[in-house]
Length: 120
Image (cartoon, rainbow, N blue to C red):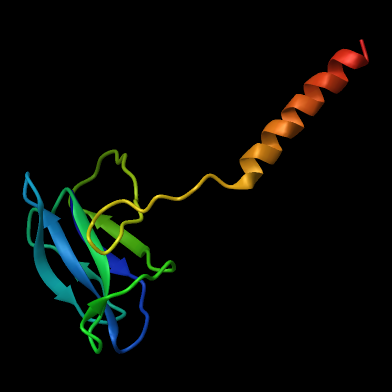
């Protein structure tokens, strides 16, 4: 269970909309105004939460590729396994194409195998 989080600080007009999972859907919880302090959940904490970057001056969700959580605290000790996912403002996952570096890595492995067999 998460006890608190500290989001990225963008400045005076950019903040977050906080959503909590209610076992069926994401439900709006609070506006997180721009601040340098951590947001603390009510006891006993939450198991899932979602932040959406929001421009309060323009009253609109915005894309912010540098938005991320700077830190979290947990409600109790134990093991944590989880993930952080980049989402669109509607909550759907962002689809990121595979980088060309994977293709280059694969080509390098094939070349190493070829060189190894050729030297035998």
